[in-house]
Length: 125
Image 1: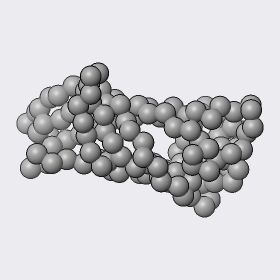
Image 2: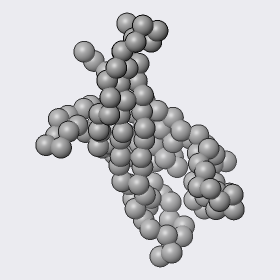
Image 3: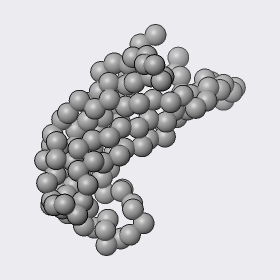
Image 4: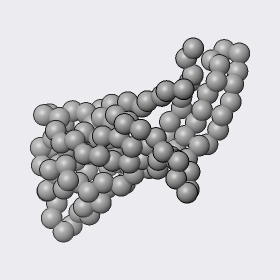
């Protein structure tokens, strides 16, 4: 069985719970949503690891593409009459914002950014 993952995230949808901070993140000095409105991920492979699975792939953010592995945790497999087979996963990664050309913030802002995803997949026959 061959499978792949692609995802596109609207960066304007980022919501930290603080409108002023969100507007600042969307500005040109950080995410530059006006010029690069999305972040995307495209898998290039999957491999078994000691702790589970890793999805290898390319993350494009701020106009820059880098290899970013996602640590994958399988949460659930299920099936029903209506939708067929389903799977739920959690995926995490950590990136350095400077690797994607985001240099604003100085020492007041960490270079490390954690990414957490909750994913639900449906098998299409």
